[in-house]
Image 1: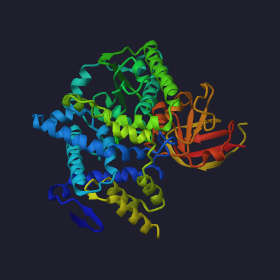
Image 2: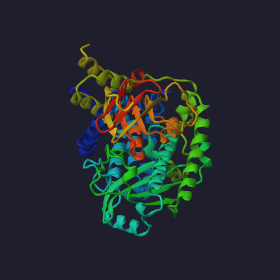
Image 3: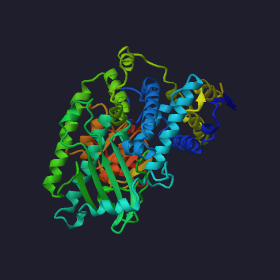
Image 4: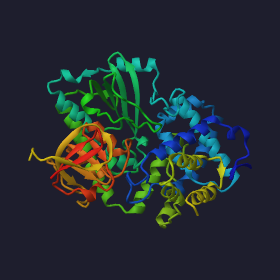
Length: 394
Length: 113
């Protein structure tokens, strides 16, 4: 073990001096500190339960499963590019990495989690073409060649040329909003498991943002079986002077309104481009609204512990393509389901850290949150809690 | 009514640009299965949960007590092109039917008295 101040780090020179991991901890800390002062009070499943509670159930098993997946794939000559393609999108990996906030009780566990975290960051770096944390406000997962190819394959329609541009824009906004609501039912506060918004890409027509929704029919929700499509891609082009920026989670950071500024668009549902007529858009919106109604009915009847199991399943569903290759079931272990069923209530120390740091200066919160995300620290819970107490004058 | 001067009631954070004057509709305490409210104008929520999607699709402005510019509610307001202000304690300060002016550019909520 290596001491750095009061913190015990793993004894691994390569992983301890990893710039990508350092940067990840810093960016995630800033992202968290910039949010509401009481994170998790503004996101579903609050107020049913605090989402951090799930981390104490699933994090260890997820890390070990990921480690096993990477070892198997590498032993079978899968390249890092092959593995990245199986993930497909980067933001969902960032959401998965929230699980690394949990404590490691010994060095072996911390080393394993660190190796996994490092591999995941390598993959994000590849998927985002060397700009893993969107530090310049761009989430560019397509290169110029791919953008040109994708644009040439679709028929981008100028919305202003339609008979009712106002209604068309309104319907497209409603479709996007409906899908955003729908994936919150599927994956709670980890919507990146079902969406990736990327861009902005410079095109001759203006700034292109691509909104992709995928994994819309996971088998662990009954209501999802009624949705008539699996994925949808919306090409949306805005004026060049539009303020369009993305953060590390692929969320749009702007206060500019989007719906009314849309110039060109094309919508691809399960590989098929749909017509931009009012009737076709209305049908698409109705089908999404119907699925949301079903989601409301199903979710409203569930208790807290059933919802916790669903949240956990969302984390493990992300790894399904890999588990299929391994020939194994994607679900979390029975032990995890049983722990939830037994109504275990782990001490939510991460939530306590959030609450007890809300009055501290921003820079101090960032310093603390950096430790939260760092998988290289052993027994970080005790030291972080001690640090928070000290800063609060105890 | 138009001669009445608006008074600044809350200074919050502007999360989606635009301005709108209308009647307050507080979603909290109305239950998850609120009927569709075609006539809703200024929707007020503690935070926007997916249960509120149908209401917000008809909203002309949104006020949330919690969140930031990247929060779910703010993202949705911008997609719909409606003003959104994040204002702590808004539910206590506003009442159903109150005539307000929501300024999403400045993050202000004015009330007509």
